[in-house]
Amino acid sequence: MIEQTKENKLRNLIIIGDRVLIKPKSPSETTKSGLFLPPSVQDQEKIQSGYVMKVGPGYALPSDSLDEPWKSEEEKVKYIPLQVREGDLAIFLQKAVHEVIYKDEKYYIVPQQAILMLERDPDLFN
Image 1 (cartoon, rainbow, N blue to C red):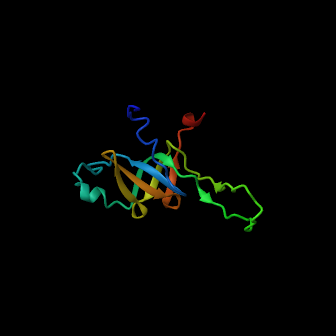
Image 2 (cartoon, rainbow, N blue to C red; image 1 turned 30 degrees about the vertical axis):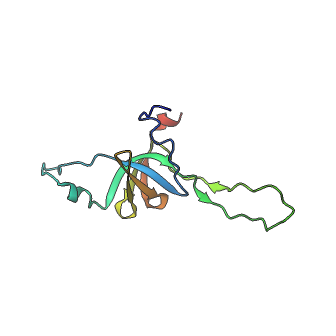
Image 3 (spheres, rainbow, N blue to C red; image 1 turned 180 degrees about the vertical axis):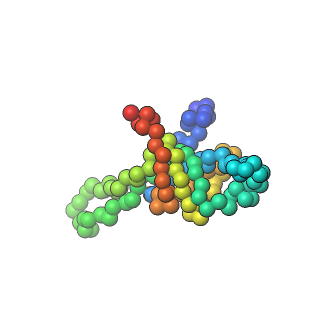
């Protein structure tokens, strides 16, 4: 049995289609003026942010082949890849979020179309 670490805890998850798995960034518990915000107010924000943990394969392209009985090979599905990459900081619309708890941690599953902006550290991908 493989020991579970922070790095491999999500390795068995497969994200489908154009969806992205995001670990929410810790929300600020106070306003700029120092007032305490209860969790119910923090969760009602229209725009949230978090770090991209896993990315789906993208948008599936329709198959252009007809049903050909003589064809023996199964065609592999082709995808248009997503713009989002693992490690990006994503700013996204809260209303499109599906919240999940996995291994006692909160994550969001968000479709790429609900992501408004990304912040990418170029050193992560070089």
